[in-house]
Length: 352
Image (cartoon, rainbow, N blue to C red; front, side, top):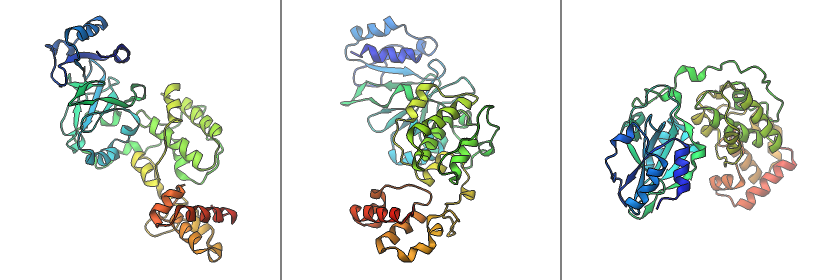
């Protein structure tokens, strides 16, 4: 029997539900009617008595204001993330072979079902198609939420009517920095010369980029030695100034997630970020004036071999980032304790 709390959650989201045969994806009833009207709560509960142990399906598209992206081949996931970074922050369900990613529809434009989403041979469910919902079980594997319904993001407006055309270039509108809503003044913070912080703060974030942008901004502020309370205040103030701010719950979720992006991870997720003016960036074999190696060039002869090796990594591979000792150790092949001692030695010499 499907637990009533999950049924209630689906009803709260406005989903059209159907029963599926036990251990299968096959509907247990004639279900085309539920593409246009939703079963009542009592009707859904009755299915547990009519079809003991049944699975549950959700009808996608306008009836449920829902699209679902189905990934079975996990080797494709990195490519899809470059096109759709919101995948990491939206509702996620573990399936037998991969994942389902849920996005809500806001009613603007048409999202067509396809088996070749963005040219990557990934299936997108919409247009009244049904998907197997958690906690259904197939071949002994129970579908479970790895990111809850509360985290669901809207389907990015930039992709409406463009799903089947792989976007090898980002539309120019993503690079335009529209005027910020009145009332927001860029605050003072540590790390003023980190260009991406200022770029996010100065941008009037649009639907589809708000959550990921504020998430990255929050963690960049923390990396640059802004305390947690002040960093959260900046995020809250920034969100309030947006024309369409996130809900308090959505903002609270930003402060809970683990951060693991470097410079390349940021630019792949925020196409509007321009690194050319970053004072820290080591790019094309050229150092910028803010680079840690350039800033401490006179101190380099005084460093131990391990300290020199660490600062070389910080100035090239990890330029502008704040890697963990483990990340440095893994890359250099050095012992983690050796790296830790070298990092502490650099700090004592005021090199950071």
